[in-house]
Structure formats: structure tokens, C-alpha cells
Image (cartoon, rainbow, N blue to C red; front, side, top):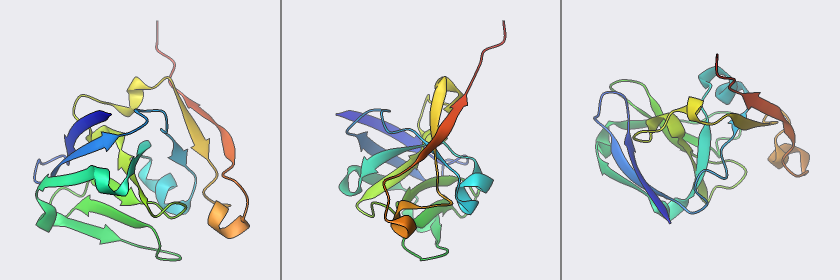
Length: 137
């Protein structure tokens, strides 16, 4: 098990999360909300994310079907995690909020089709491509 510590930008919200599959589930999404926020996320099981402090500062946002719940710090506005729509028993955790991790640490990040969401289409999640980071010489 891969236990990581993390938090928001201002430090008000701090959490610990266990990533059962490490960073094997990193992804970006093309739904309207994810597209605008631009986060790279990794999956964690519902019981594996523990808010260490600042839970009272977390606020949430729901849209469309209201199934997914996106959490962010009410002080600095940083999105920390969300309860997933396609798998409500999983969280998507913002990798940029994990201590010592940057979304630019991953040379390739799969991009999933959130516009045509599996919960709407009844189809398996569809990968649209890869977001690639190419280091300058």
C-alpha cells in the first residue's frame, strides 16, 4: 500500500490517502468541470482518504447529475479530491495536492472521455489520448 500525505495550497486542509494501485490510475478528464480545472487525478478507495485537519474548511460542488462531489478548500480554493461519478465508492485525488508530487512528474497521462461519460452511454470508459510532458533539452 502506498500512503501519501497531502493538502491544499494554504495548508488549512491536510489529509492522508492510501493509493492501492500507486499512480497506476492517473488520468485527466474532458468533462466540462475537469476540463476547466485541469487537474491530474489518481484513484483511491472511499475509506482510504482521511482528513487529518481542516475538514470544516472543505466545501463541495456538485453539477449535472449531482453524483460526483468535488471538494475544495474554502480558504485558498484548491480542489483536493472528489467522489467519482462513475465509481462513487472511489475518490479522485488531485496529484498536485500530494506532498512532493507534481502533475509534471508523469511523462504521459491518459485522457478519458468525460463528455461522453460511461454513466450516460452505458459503455466502458473511453480513452481519447495522452497528455505528454516533453522535457526541454
